[in-house]
Image (cartoon, rainbow, N blue to C red; front, side, top):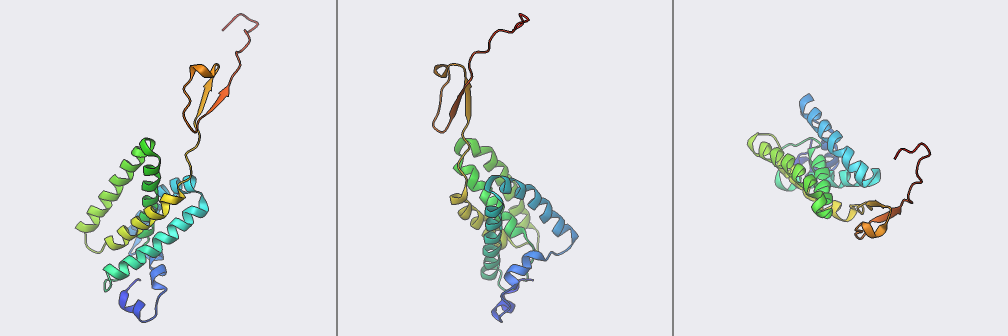
Length: 182
């Protein structure tokens, strides 16, 4: 459990170990469901090593945020690190421009619901949530992989508009079928 006075007395490992402790079955269940959902998208998009780096950095920043803003309040759970993955998805959506707007809207909805619930219910550390969110966003911005090139298929390249980053694959006209069908 993370607790500022204990950390001041040399128990620095509490910053990390608190993320592996939970306040009950529902607490760990909700964190694992969120991690499975957002973690899958982050891992597929950023890659496993970058996802791990985002998760660990968010976990550490969330822990230090709790130390600064909730010094004397015992805290535990992985939600600060999970919020960091949501921050990385926000960075991804913003870097993708108009194509990423849906991702940003979906993430913001989940983030706002969780923050409102965190402020309304007792025992939830929004310091950890916000610290992890900011860390994931700031670290995610430079890690966003380039957008994949869109493929435009055209028989005649003059009939199709091509935008920067797109590729054209030419398909020669198909010979007529022998059975007379199109």
